[in-house]
Length: 167
Image (cartoon, rainbow, N blue to C red; front, side):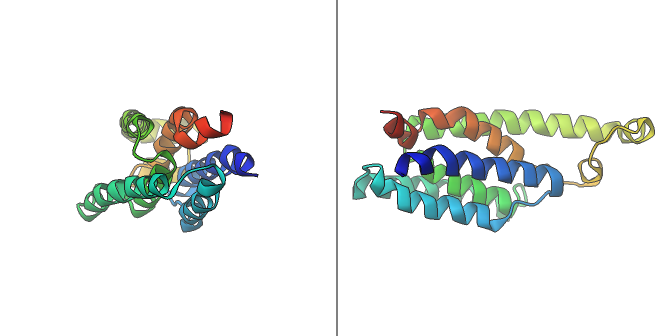
Protein backbone atom coordinates (compact mmCIF):
# COMPACT_ATOMS: atom_id res chain seq x y z
CA UNK A 1 0.00 0.00 0.00
CA UNK A 2 2.82 2.41 0.84
CA UNK A 3 4.32 1.93 -2.61
CA UNK A 4 1.00 2.69 -4.28
CA UNK A 5 0.67 5.91 -2.30
CA UNK A 6 4.25 6.89 -3.14
CA UNK A 7 3.83 6.12 -6.84
CA UNK A 8 0.38 7.72 -7.25
CA UNK A 9 -0.48 10.44 -4.72
CA UNK A 10 2.49 12.78 -5.13
CA UNK A 11 2.56 12.80 -8.95
CA UNK A 12 -1.24 13.02 -9.19
CA UNK A 13 -1.43 15.96 -6.76
CA UNK A 14 1.30 17.85 -8.61
CA UNK A 15 -0.36 17.20 -11.96
CA UNK A 16 -3.71 18.44 -10.64
CA UNK A 17 -2.08 21.54 -9.17
CA UNK A 18 -0.21 22.36 -12.39
CA UNK A 19 -3.29 21.87 -14.57
CA UNK A 20 -5.49 23.86 -12.20
CA UNK A 21 -2.98 26.71 -12.06
CA UNK A 22 -2.73 26.75 -15.86
CA UNK A 23 -6.50 26.74 -16.38
CA UNK A 24 -7.68 28.91 -13.49
CA UNK A 25 -4.60 30.56 -11.91
CA UNK A 26 -5.60 28.89 -8.64
CA UNK A 27 -4.16 25.90 -6.79
CA UNK A 28 -6.79 24.24 -4.59
CA UNK A 29 -5.86 24.11 -0.89
CA UNK A 30 -6.96 20.48 -0.77
CA UNK A 31 -4.05 19.49 -3.03
CA UNK A 32 -1.49 20.74 -0.49
CA UNK A 33 -3.50 19.22 2.37
CA UNK A 34 -3.64 15.83 0.62
CA UNK A 35 0.12 15.94 0.06
CA UNK A 36 0.81 16.60 3.75
CA UNK A 37 -1.66 14.01 5.06
CA UNK A 38 -0.45 11.39 2.58
CA UNK A 39 3.15 11.99 3.65
CA UNK A 40 2.27 11.56 7.33
CA UNK A 41 0.47 8.30 6.49
CA UNK A 42 3.07 6.86 4.12
CA UNK A 43 6.30 7.84 5.90
CA UNK A 44 6.05 5.26 8.71
CA UNK A 45 4.77 2.65 6.25
CA UNK A 46 7.82 3.30 4.06
CA UNK A 47 10.12 2.60 7.00
CA UNK A 48 11.07 6.15 7.95
CA UNK A 49 11.89 6.59 11.63
CA UNK A 50 10.77 9.51 13.77
CA UNK A 51 14.04 11.35 13.20
CA UNK A 52 13.76 11.00 9.42
CA UNK A 53 10.11 12.09 9.47
CA UNK A 54 11.09 15.11 11.58
CA UNK A 55 13.79 16.01 9.04
CA UNK A 56 11.25 15.81 6.21
CA UNK A 57 8.90 18.08 8.15
CA UNK A 58 11.81 20.43 8.89
CA UNK A 59 12.48 20.66 5.15
CA UNK A 60 8.88 21.72 4.69
CA UNK A 61 9.22 24.28 7.48
CA UNK A 62 12.38 25.69 5.91
CA UNK A 63 10.75 26.00 2.49
CA UNK A 64 7.65 27.48 4.12
CA UNK A 65 9.66 30.21 5.85
CA UNK A 66 11.26 31.28 2.56
CA UNK A 67 7.94 31.07 0.70
CA UNK A 68 6.20 33.05 3.45
CA UNK A 69 8.77 35.83 3.09
CA UNK A 70 8.29 35.82 -0.70
CA UNK A 71 4.51 35.88 -0.24
CA UNK A 72 4.79 38.78 2.21
CA UNK A 73 6.86 40.68 -0.37
CA UNK A 74 4.16 39.92 -2.97
CA UNK A 75 6.64 37.95 -5.06
CA UNK A 76 4.94 34.56 -4.74
CA UNK A 77 1.30 33.55 -4.60
CA UNK A 78 -0.18 31.82 -1.59
CA UNK A 79 -1.17 28.68 -3.48
CA UNK A 80 2.33 28.37 -4.91
CA UNK A 81 3.84 28.78 -1.44
CA UNK A 82 1.56 26.11 0.05
CA UNK A 83 2.19 23.68 -2.80
CA UNK A 84 5.96 24.16 -2.68
CA UNK A 85 5.94 23.65 1.10
CA UNK A 86 3.77 20.53 0.99
CA UNK A 87 5.81 18.99 -1.81
CA UNK A 88 9.13 19.79 -0.10
CA UNK A 89 8.09 17.54 2.78
CA UNK A 90 8.22 14.58 0.39
CA UNK A 91 11.88 15.34 -0.42
CA UNK A 92 13.16 15.95 3.10
CA UNK A 93 16.55 17.43 3.92
CA UNK A 94 18.36 15.81 1.03
CA UNK A 95 20.12 16.63 -2.20
CA UNK A 96 16.91 15.75 -4.00
CA UNK A 97 15.28 18.79 -2.31
CA UNK A 98 18.02 21.01 -3.68
CA UNK A 99 17.60 19.38 -7.09
CA UNK A 100 13.85 19.97 -6.88
CA UNK A 101 14.20 23.63 -5.95
CA UNK A 102 16.74 24.21 -8.74
CA UNK A 103 14.38 22.62 -11.27
CA UNK A 104 11.50 24.76 -10.01
CA UNK A 105 13.64 27.89 -10.25
CA UNK A 106 14.88 27.14 -13.77
CA UNK A 107 11.48 26.17 -15.13
CA UNK A 108 9.84 29.04 -13.26
CA UNK A 109 12.20 31.45 -15.00
CA UNK A 110 11.54 29.88 -18.39
CA UNK A 111 7.80 29.93 -17.74
CA UNK A 112 7.95 33.60 -16.76
CA UNK A 113 9.84 34.48 -19.93
CA UNK A 114 7.34 32.52 -22.01
CA UNK A 115 4.34 34.19 -20.35
CA UNK A 116 5.88 37.65 -20.73
CA UNK A 117 6.56 36.90 -24.41
CA UNK A 118 2.93 35.82 -24.86
CA UNK A 119 1.70 38.97 -23.18
CA UNK A 120 3.90 41.14 -25.39
CA UNK A 121 2.13 39.64 -28.40
CA UNK A 122 -1.41 39.68 -26.98
CA UNK A 123 -2.95 41.50 -29.93
CA UNK A 124 -1.34 39.17 -32.46
CA UNK A 125 -2.46 36.08 -30.50
CA UNK A 126 -6.03 37.35 -30.14
CA UNK A 127 -6.17 38.29 -33.83
CA UNK A 128 -4.87 34.90 -34.93
CA UNK A 129 -7.51 33.07 -32.90
CA UNK A 130 -5.02 30.80 -31.11
CA UNK A 131 -6.69 29.03 -28.18
CA UNK A 132 -4.64 30.67 -25.41
CA UNK A 133 -6.46 31.01 -22.07
CA UNK A 134 -7.46 34.64 -21.59
CA UNK A 135 -6.04 34.88 -18.07
CA UNK A 136 -2.55 33.99 -19.33
CA UNK A 137 -2.61 37.08 -21.50
CA UNK A 138 -4.23 39.52 -19.08
CA UNK A 139 -3.33 38.49 -15.51
CA UNK A 140 -0.43 40.15 -13.76
CA UNK A 141 0.84 36.95 -12.19
CA UNK A 142 2.44 33.79 -13.53
CA UNK A 143 0.96 30.30 -12.94
CA UNK A 144 4.05 29.09 -11.10
CA UNK A 145 2.32 25.83 -10.17
CA UNK A 146 3.28 24.63 -13.65
CA UNK A 147 6.98 25.05 -12.86
CA UNK A 148 6.50 23.43 -9.45
CA UNK A 149 4.86 20.44 -11.15
CA UNK A 150 7.57 20.08 -13.79
CA UNK A 151 10.31 20.37 -11.17
CA UNK A 152 8.58 17.77 -9.02
CA UNK A 153 8.25 15.28 -11.86
CA UNK A 154 11.93 15.64 -12.73
CA UNK A 155 13.29 15.44 -9.16
CA UNK A 156 10.85 12.95 -7.60
CA UNK A 157 12.62 9.78 -8.83
CA UNK A 158 15.64 10.69 -6.67
CA UNK A 159 13.58 11.53 -3.56
CA UNK A 160 14.14 9.38 -0.46
CA UNK A 161 10.59 7.99 -0.50
CA UNK A 162 10.76 7.00 -4.15
CA UNK A 163 14.18 5.43 -3.70
CA UNK A 164 12.81 3.46 -0.70
CA UNK A 165 9.78 2.35 -2.71
CA UNK A 166 11.93 1.18 -5.60
CA UNK A 167 14.54 -0.46 -3.34
